[in-house]
Length: 392
Image (cartoon, rainbow, N blue to C red):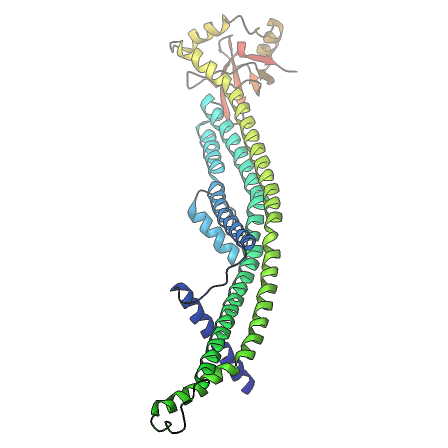
């Protein structure tokens, strides 16, 4: 217990000495030992590295997750060491809504089918974005965060120790300087004592004599002050070298961050290339819808009979052969048929078609010879023969 009290007293005295020295430096009343230029340069480079690493890291987090509420949630789960719940991103949510609306409006219609295709593509983009975020977190954010929380924290700790050692060194220098001044003043007073007969007349000499005794106490501490100065100088030099070695590791940090930056750029380029390909594929799929819409805009809605006559007049698609058509009308069985190109129904009793899909067709009594009854899942309706190709 006695040892702890002494240690506490010594620590309090050291802290007080450092506080007095630091305050004196601020007001220009105490000398300050300056670090060498190379060490100051290394310290400045470390500070700039830490500053810009934090800025880039935070802005990258904003890029990967624009929603601040989600970022806060992920931060809290990370601190609690719990698994972050999986949330659908914006593309995945949009894709789900498009797909659901397409099924609700009817996948057999051109609009419903286009919504389903767009929804699938949006979900593909959402999955690609999720992979890009994971890759960027592992290859960029995690190494940057490890530097801030690991390497730079070690540098900051050693820098604080160096600051304390410098203050101790300056306190020792100031103590030695005061001891030398006290010794010089005591020597000056001892060299001119008053004469014996005049001793009573010089009452002030008694005060001077006591002052000399006090000054000699400082003189006796000169040797101790020199010893403390040597110890403080040695500890300061050792700490400065330790700090210098850590600061020189910033060059390695820059090399690691450069590698992380290359990996981030490659992941970003691959992500955008992948998303661009998804959209180009979707654009090709939707091209047939656009051409069909343009064709329908040039036509006036009419009865199914007039529509059938226009379809029959189309020379670009060969009709079903007469023999196959006669066989289909004469039998009551159903056959598979491939849709040759997209068809948008104009009447409620007619079923829309999508190119290359397979449907079930059959003949119905009293039906126009240019039409068959088509079936796709739960959807049924008349379909034009000229848009079909029978399958075996």
